[in-house]
Image (cartoon, rainbow, N blue to C red; front, side):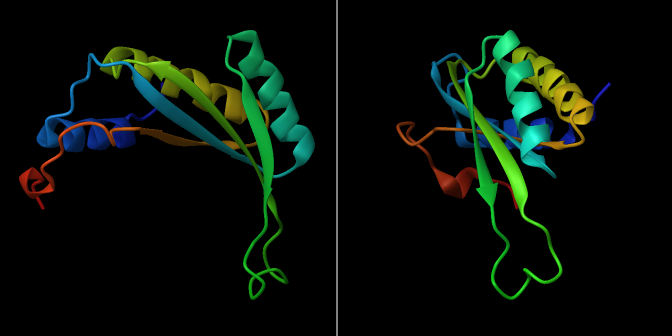
Length: 124
């Protein structure tokens, strides 16, 4: 079972902001892999569960390139409501997919730009 601490933290912030979880919105999910082949393998697994994704190479800043190899990133987007149980189910599934391909599931973000946000309501 995956630790859902990141999910819980983001949901708590969204609750404080008064985000409507029932509203369908764009949700982006991210993965990081050591090689392009690993990223491609994860993309194949994602397509089996009806997620279209894209892969791109992340280059370290010029001053780190002698010490850090480039990473391969995969992102996928789905239009969906922020149903907490479903997001956590996806987090568990995505963590498993990333593990099978020597990578990491790097979390998710949701487009809340159209919501009426009052940032002063966030507890520090």
